[in-house]
Image (cartoon, rainbow, N blue to C red; front, side):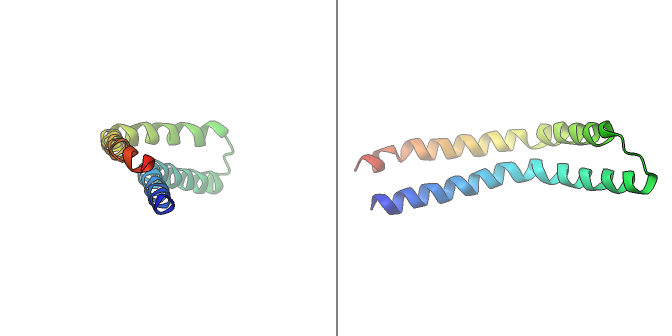
Length: 89
C-alpha cells in the first residue's frame, strides 16, 4: 500500500513541476529562438541581445501567471499535508 501511495505522490509531484514550469519556459524558448534567428539574419553576435528580451518576457510572463502558479502550488501542498496520515498507516 505504501509503495502505491509513494508512486502516486511522486507522479503528482512530477506533473505539478511540469505544470508550473511550462508557462515560464515556453515564452523564454520562443523569444530565444526569435532572437537567434534575428541574430543569424543580421550577423549581430551581441550577448546582451539574447539576455534582455528573454528577461523582460519572463518577468511579464511571471506577472501574468504567477498568481495561478502560486495557487497551484499551494493547492498541491495542502493535498500533500492532508495525506500525511496515510504515510504513517
